[in-house]
Figure (cartoon, rainbow, N blue to C red):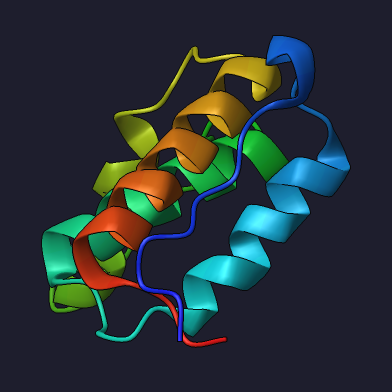
Amino acid sequence: MENSKTFSLASGNVNSNEFNLAADIVKKLIKTPDNDELLHLYGFYKQATVGDNNQPAPGFLDFKGKSKHNAWLQCKGISVFDSEIKYITYVNELIKKYGINQ
């Protein structure tokens, strides 16, 4: 089991394959990230895959939905390219923190 394996960006260029690889690898973390970490991942992922959040806010009692909505809103205006970089960088930080199952 390799606990500190990370991956790098090919020549600083992020492409869909690297982003998708990061999205797959994050599911293999030894420990589940805490809620704040998951919200960061969610915001970067949604910004990279959908773009700016133009969805209406969830209902008053949908606390989880509101947290996710707000995490995505915090990424508003970040380009797809930059969102992918931020997502991959954050996944690498989580790999270093928690390790991954092979």
